[in-house]
Length: 202
View 1 (cartoon, rainbow, N blue to C red):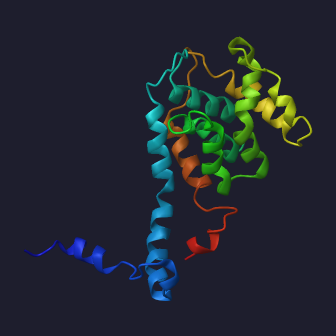
View 2 (tube, rainbow, N blue to C red):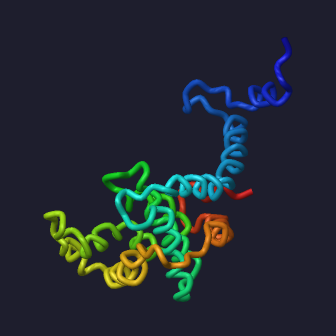
View 3 (cartoon, rainbow, N blue to C red):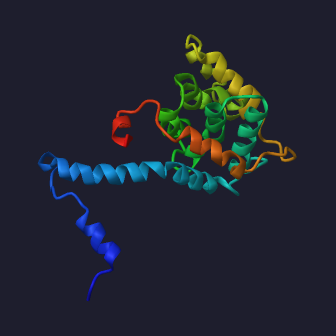
């Protein structure tokens, strides 16, 4: 029985090594080509994963996707740049797999594409958001004070005050995910900083 042509091609276009130390330039040429194609589809995967938040309320007044859209919409309407707005959109994308550290998950995704400040806001917004509710759970609402000397402290506090903690209004008219999709694609089109940056260059 003959294998489909595309399957045969896929099998032929694979590296030959069994251990990385055996790899040749030809092997890594194959892998590099596959990597570049895969990396270009990152925005698609991110947007699809964000959709997992749709309908997930977790007891909140709005679902997690609506909270994300509302946070990004508020930032956009306030004149924030696209890096910031995309961070606002994705800041809770880690809720699905990072129940105990969701800010770090989101921050890892956006890190190659944003400034140090925008990344820091995303990575630490959980502690800053806690100012508004940790005391109701027997936790320390002032935990953000551990970061007081960081140059991005005020920026993170502002993000939570103006956009994140305010984005639970069921009556707020948010922009759609489709509205933000072009921004996500532009911001993630090319990494600003990554050890793999050279590998994605054609």
